[in-house]
Picture 1 (cartoon, one colour):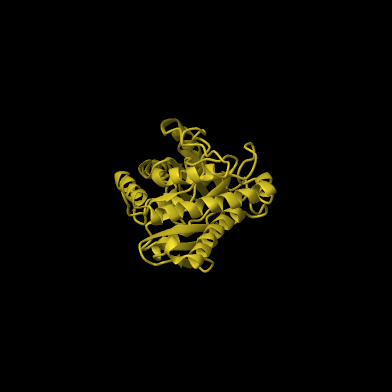
Picture 2 (cartoon, helix red, strand yellow; picture 1 turned 90 degrees about the vertical axis):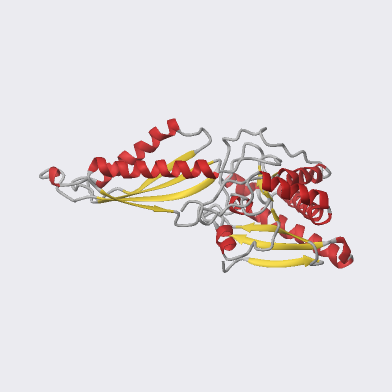
Length: 346
């Protein structure tokens, strides 16, 4: 990743934790996901710990790594970094995301990208329609099949699609058509199962129309759901309470308010947390112009300071508190430990 960065501080002896400074933006509307705040929080926490280390090296008994993690929006920069070894030797990773609430733990769905290309046979739509095989019909059947599939999938799973290419003229039987689809689910296992069912629907539409079909998964590596480490999250919440915030525990906010992030791929390799900090009013949604405007207000600046404080203290706790570190490690093992993220969907 050409635009990533890595910096370290601390004694170099003992445990190692990474603070992630995630940066990205959205076309035309800028920081509508608040990455300016996310990155600032991560850098601020790291600089605070570095300043502490320079004053008293013994006060930071371990290594703190600042990782700049670009390309999260619609991509999976952290997975690309992980495959190149960016998280090797790191025992935990922490970051914080802006939101309409202070929330210690909220659902983040895994996400896969699918492109389905149907190949038909062109023909005159009036004179000889029976000579053709309609790729647009196949796309339509697949799109309708996704709608019907929603009735038999977990309520928290998500399917959304768009037909990006559906022909050129009404008078020509469409020879080629393309559907792009996002598949999301709460657990890696349900995401894998749902992916198989979506692929079956894509191929079934081709059978019904006599067209050819090409299924291409994950132009960018897929994102797994976030697996939150509750021991680390509890420390984050304690430190935010000293700043006057009251982070909501898991289950308070409706889990249907769920998006996706490539931090999930990190959380299935090593223990991690991805809490939310209030930077906007609760009714302001992510990925809107209103959220982008809220990301440069005094409230957002306060969130950046409080978030940096919380991450710095949580990182220091992990390095200095043997009981906490053991609890973090034990919980990660009980939850299934590390999985082979890169090959999970093979």
